[in-house]
Image (cartoon, rainbow, N blue to C red):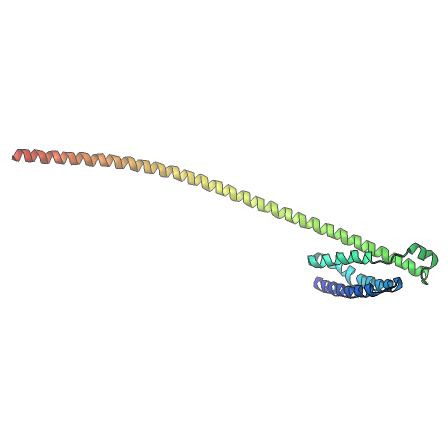
Amino acid sequence: MSADEDAASCERALAELKDLEKQYNRKRTDEERAAVHAKMKAVWRANVLEQFNRSRSSFPSELKSQIKSWQAKLKSMSPKTDKRDALVEGGEGREPQETEQDYIRAGQEILAMNQMHLQDAKSNLEQARMIGENSLEMLEQQDEALKRTADSLDEMESTLKVSEKVLKSMARKMMTDKYLWVMIGLTALAIIGAIVAAAV
């Protein structure tokens, strides 16, 4: 059976448990409630526990929460009878062997529930490990990006220094060219003045 089929089976079983819960609440006597509770436990064992333990890692979080909630609810709804007395006295007309079987089933349920808790803990630890690895990978990527940015800034600084030197050189050349043109202009004016003076 696939994980999706197990999840669908659990969802149907939880819906059935909800209907049985309504019947349980309508009952007036302990005997009637105990009978409904027994049906609920049978549905829980047959259609929830096994499927959940088999495919829990693939179940959605909401379904896991519902199953845990029902687990606690079934425990709180358990009839308040002293099973040790029932084992000695035979209970309400039941044979001691049946009561022993109840003990065995109860023990199996407790083991299954403990297994559920352990699987939850393992799943949470695995998720925490994955989150930690992803965070470390992101930090390493950010560190590499920062190093690349620092290298780019160093290159920009070097380029700016070269540009500054080029601009200063161009400015000095422009000043030299300006003085040269002034000298040429003055010389031309002097020649023109001399020619005019000679003509007069």
